[in-house]
Image 1 (cartoon, helix red, strand yellow):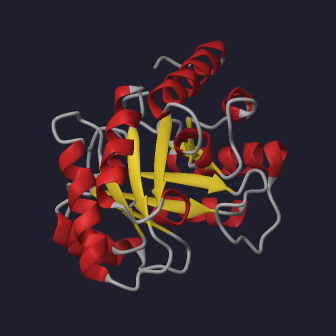
Image 2: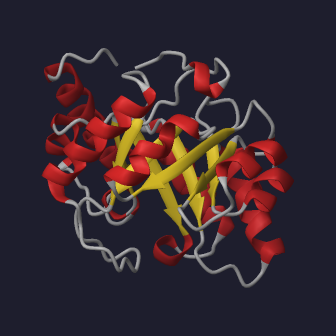
Length: 236
């Protein structure tokens, strides 16, 4: 899973195996609780975290929450990214951002954040995957794979077949070592199938942060993901 990509300036590949999305709309705006959830997720084997707040009425409050989360996972080696908002990522001093197709262009984000930052991108189609060769991004997440209630998505789910096709085109564009994850509607019952379809990891919200022990749910998901990767012949 760890490699280097010339298009990312030689940085080590991002570990997408278990990508936890701390969504304020799902988990609430309590910064202390979000920080605790992040720490539990990391303890259970989460490899990457993202702060997501689709509508931010109070940027200062959001920044305080991001800083609390970042402090909670400091020293763990697990990067924290901010969804959409390059300015908040820069102000908080986190490891990077995740961008949608209508957000700031990755090249502009790279200019602002520097070479060391992690920049991720959402892909919804094969045509978007074809463009990866010219974009200064470190990973991409494909989706939505399945239907989800955590985000309004006007596009129909791509399903496992669509995921596999987009992964194939992403690999052609950036090579076999470029990390490609999957997002939307993925849980413990579907994570292995998503990995079998070609994804290097899964991005999850509800199946990690809603109900039960976050650490326990993370351990279960991580076990399923690692087992599926091993079955595919990929070294974790």
